[in-house]
Amino acid sequence: MIKRIATIVLMGALSLVLTLTITGVRIIPHQDFRLAQLELSNAFINQTIEYRLSSPMLVTKVYYKDKLVGIMEDTSGIQALLENTYNLIYAQDFPEAQLLLNEDIMLVEDLIQFKVSNIDQDIVSFIEANELYSIEVIRIDFSSGYTIFVNRLEDFEVAREQYLLNFINKESYDRIVRKEEAPPLQGYGYRDINLIVSETIKVSKGRAQADEILKNVNEIVYFFSYGFNSEIKTYEVRPYDTVEAVAYFNGLTAQQVLSINADKIKSINQILEPGMKLNVTYFNSPIKVVVIKERLVEEIVYPQRTLYLPDPTIREGMSRVANKEKTGTKDVLYLETYVNGVLMGGQEIKSSVTKEPVREVIMYGTRVIPGIGSGTFRMPVDNYRISCGWMCYTNHQAIDLVDRYMRYGYIYAADRGVVQSRGYDPIRSGYWIRINHNNGYTTFYAHLDAMAYFPPGVAVEKGERIGRIGMTGRTTGPHVHFAITYNGSAINPCSRLKC
Image (cartoon, rainbow, N blue to C red; front, side, top):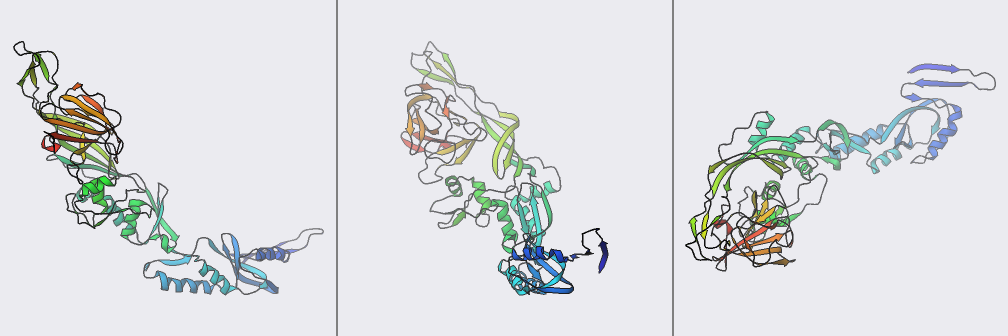
């Protein structure tokens, strides 16, 4: 067993010292007794030197975080503890794993020339009481700084795919994995162009406590969704709630509510049962999932502003429509970027007019623009998306509109008219403006970022800027609350617009 014996003779007053170097062990010379006693006095467990041995004795020193726990004569008790603990607690959840000592525990074999008191069982009890053992499982390190432990690598792969399918359909996911090009759009809608997961991972073996290990697919999916956050926000469905309303009141999109409640909700249009409890926790994923989509949509092409021409045959203050306005249409292709399911931006790739608009021509007796509406309306925002539709919650007699690409973009008059009133309501509407179109219609715009541009009595043209989108009053995000009344009764704006 002994590999090398080196004898060093020091001349003069120096004494003879014998040092033995042995694989994995060392002999402590006589003059090191004092150092050994000092180390024992600082150990976790009290242990004493009983007497000097005539020949070296092989022992095992147990260290915890580089501090001596104690000296063992026989380590079989540790192995027995690990085997019994594994069989009693861990075998069912980790049938393919091995229970080992914690990485903070170090066993060092040593040759000593003195007998110490036997505290083998005390050391075993110390390891058991402090649970200084861990399971060897799969360790996964993310480039974002997160580290997780999983029982099976197969579970991780399944969970990763399941999480990614929150943001892309299975057909597109499989195609992108195979690196195939997306088929062309056959009509209006979306096609998934690419899926990018920004973070990289490193897979290795690692040791962890049982409560640190993600044991199944569901636990790993939860990690992908919320990291190590354990605070889940739930919402109890009330009568007449819709998926859109639940999303609106909790600062989510309808698609996000659908994704994180896929076990309960199969469609955005699904009727919700009162009392149903839904997860409304915002995604806080440790990974960033980027999905690139193309969106082909038909958009309205508004004609040029109404052309007013003088007509000497018409009395001053009177007018007639010589050419009635007609909107056109165009097909627009956008490239949109979503990060963890949230639209972050888009750009127009190309567009083509499918129906030319017709400009309205009005003959008038004076050069003053009359404040009389045409009876047809335009969307009050550009690049519109309806965030909360007609009656998406009780008494919501309007539609809420956002600008997809400019959160605080301009608001436009939906038709010609005269500003009837404007103001500020801190409880509900924030900054608002009402326009009377003098043909039975009025329009109302709320949650502006500041006081509307024009005071009462000012005539405005269709499509003229009257303010900017804001989030004043009661709102969960920037949008414009848009309402139409006809002869004093509220009507669904989508009945007059192409929503």
